[in-house]
Image (cartoon, rainbow, N blue to C red; front, top):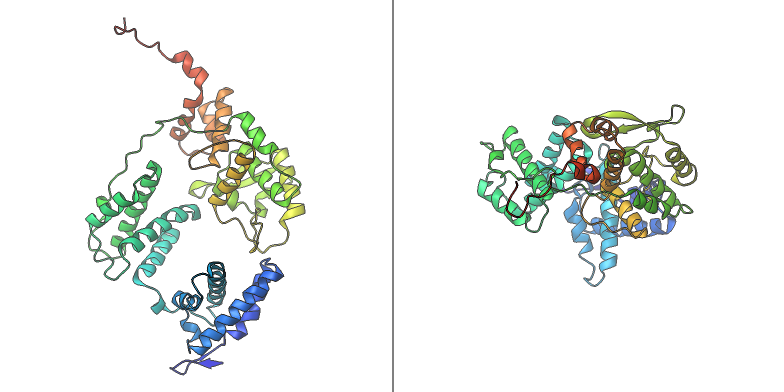
Length: 408
C-alpha cells in the first residue's frame, strides 16, 4: 500500500496491472499486444510512484505529462503509450466504486457541464444513443472553441453563439448546419433549465432554412445492389459479417443504428422474425427472410465467437464488443460499394440501400402507406419524398412546356 501526503492508504498501481491485462485478454486482445500494454502500464506505474502521485488523484493531465517524456520524433510510440495508459486509467475508473473514485478536482467546469448535459439528454429527455453521438461532439466543439478558460457559462452571449455558427458552417452541408443549430438550442435550454443562466438564450440561435424534398433522394438501383452483394468475399470472417449487414440494409431497409443495436435475443428463429428497435424507442417485428437468416446463421456459427457483449455484430479486432455506432456500418457500406465499382458521394452511405428499397417498391406500384409501413416511418410526409423517383409516372402527369410566346 502507498500513502499520500494526507496519510490516506491507497492500493499500488502495480497490483492492478495483471488484473488489467486479464481484463484485456478477456476482451480478445492478442498476447503480443498484451505484452506491449503490460510494459506501458508498468512504466506508468513507476512514473507515478517516483512523483508521489496518489492513485485516486490520477487524471488525464497526468497521462499527458507521462507521454511528454518521449521525443517528438517517436510519434507511433507516443500514440501507442497514450492509448495504453488511457485504457489503463479507464479500467481503474471502472473499478472506482471500490478503489479509484474519479476526483472532482480533475474535472473542469465545462467538462462537468457536458457530463450534466449528457445525463439530462439521456435520463430526462430520453434521447437514443445515436442522437447523443450527434449532439455531444457538437457541444464539446463549441465549449472547446469558445470557453477554454474560465467564466463559462456566465460569459455566454448571443453574439458568441452567432459567431460560432458562422465560423463552423463555412463549406458545410445544410444538414450539418441544421444539426449544429438544434444542438446549440437544446444546450441553451438546458443551461437555463438547470439555473446556469438567468435567461433562456435558445431563441438567439438562428433557425436554419432547409427545403424539404428539394432534390430526389439518392438511392442504389437494383443492379447496383446485386453487384454490391456479389462483390462480398464470403470466404472470410469479415466478408460473412459484412454480407449479413448489407442484406439487412437491402432486404429490410434497416437504418445503420438499428443494425448496430441488434442483439442475440432479437432474432426469433422459430417464428422467423427479427425485433428492431427504431427511432423514438419504437420496437417492431420484421420478417426474417430466408437469405438474411442463412447469412446471420453462417456468421454466428463460424465467426462471431464468444463475447460478453450481446450485440450480434462485433468488431473484428479487440476489444471484441459491438460496433461503435452507425458510422461503422457506413464505413462497411462505402468499402463494399468501392469494391463493386459503385461511386456515390455525400453522407449517409448506408441509407442508399434503404432508399433503393423504397424506390423499387414505388416503381412496382406500392402505395405510400405500404412503403411507410415497411420503412417504419412515423409520418407519411417522410415517405412522400420517394414519389420524386417515380420518373415514369411523373412523365405521365407532367404538363407540356409552354410555347415560345407563352401558353395558349
